[in-house]
Length: 116
Image (tube, one colour):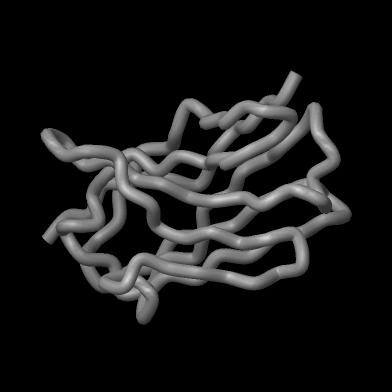
C-alpha cells in the first residue's frame, strides 16, 4: 500500500523559505515519478513540480524561479524547497505519485501559510 506523509509546512513571513518533505513507503520509490501539488482556498489543485526517476524536473511556469523539487532515493523522501515566499503561496501542499501500478496517489498534505 502506497503511503505518502508530508511535513515541513507552517506559518512563515513573506520573503522567507520552507523545505517540505514527503516520506514515501509501499512502493519502489527510486523507480517512480513524483510530484508536488498545491491547493489554495477556493482554488483547484494545481501542479507545482514533478521529478522523474532519473531526476529530470519540470515546474509550473510561474513558480520555477522560486521552487526546487528534489529527491533522496536512499531515504525514500521527496523535497520541495520554496524560497522568497509570497502570500499567494498560502495553500495545502500535497505529495503525489502520478502513476504506480495503475493508480495515482496523494498524501494528506501540509499547510503552508505566508503572512505579510
